Image 1 (cartoon, rainbow, N blue to C red):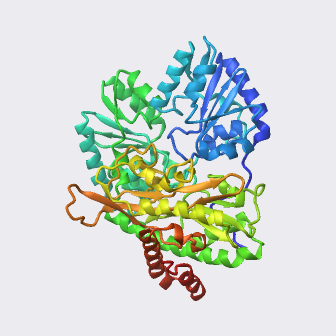
Image 2 (cartoon, one colour):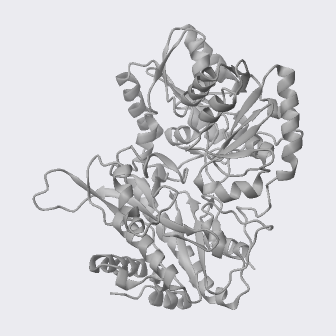
Image 3 (cartoon, one colour):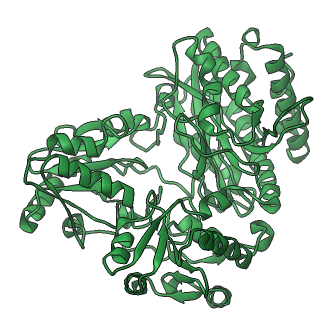
Length: 609
């Protein structure tokens, strides 16, 4: 049987320990003269995936999701999660200790304003909250007649006896054939933006931006090849990279020292204070930068200039080398996924497969490419009712057999040096019901609507999001997640600023790669999601068009389960799109497959129209 190397199926939840750990935290807060504490799911770099030493929310509450927060007061506590984790949180968290609140609909700041007693002192770590986030907390405390108090050291750490050590993942240079642009050229573009903003220095607090800017990659956090580091880029003079030297081999250090000062992390705070003392104007992104950085500059006399991170939009628009790499990675990944789908179709009807078996098999097919560096996130693999849990993570405890008459949803991706992949397929095991076929086809219609969209240059994701939902809405159905997110180039599988969602305000620019993943989830029964990655491109010429138009090129190459399609619900144009997509998949992948898998692919991609 297959094995997984890049992901574990251990049950990480520690629900039973939360009572004692919350009691210990309250005792520590009392010792410090505090009446409560805010616990975000964050590290000093505001990463989505954080190293084990920064998993304070999981340690305290048992919740292992990638987004959330908790607030602990003397007499009550609450955990805040979004709709993706509505079921998971109740399995992992003791709701006798933590009330469950919605992160968006009833956010921590609102809960604090309603529950914090007048005169209370609420503690927080300024390294774990953004500038904007800390301001929201301060306003909530003020409205409650209380005060927000910054702490130098996190009180949770005082009771964390076996806390893991900080990571020391080796840093590697990201080859120019994959990066497509030298670090010196990137720095020149960033300096031009700094000058335009009338700033003296830019603080780069996002490790994804640091890694992109200096053309380096690392292994400090799971599944995202970033090196945990801060950087500063002055308008004139050499930039500085603040990174643990133990991560740097001689060749890497030599290459970095040719373009930047390489300094130890402990020098970063001293440098920020020194900048402040020179009355420098320091630009930072208040939505992403830890508040501690702004405090160090401002408290020493410097001026904080707020503005969105100029690197984020530069990183999001892929250059020709990155686009070529994405296409190559998608084809390679498509071969692995197609091998998996053929294997699954052969094995699942026998009734012996489990969710873990499927995850391990798919990872194994990807590893057999010889180029897989990691999975791009822990695989989501849900059989039957588990598929309705949007961010389900199978463990040995929850592992479920895959039975006939069910749907199996598998959402996965790979990290390759030339690109990052993310794909979801929903598979029928045995004969699907008419209800399954209808709802799958409604989701597919939304997926096709995004894939075929033509839109004026400057259109944002919120303006397109409705295209994916319209067919579900007509039946009173919907899904509680975005339609698509940006994807990095051998970086994070979730990348800003662009996304296709109700909140997607950033314009979609040519060269951006996003996901296209509408879904539908029937609690207790099944889940459906169809996900491909798409590239924003210039649209083919349209007669009499009065403005430039963009379109999407679908990058992902793997069959969509035709057994779940109800052709009568598709228009002629939708059927033509599906048949053309499957013909493209067949032409691109068939020459790279063994004979039995090729035969399976030919049948799986047969025209429906």
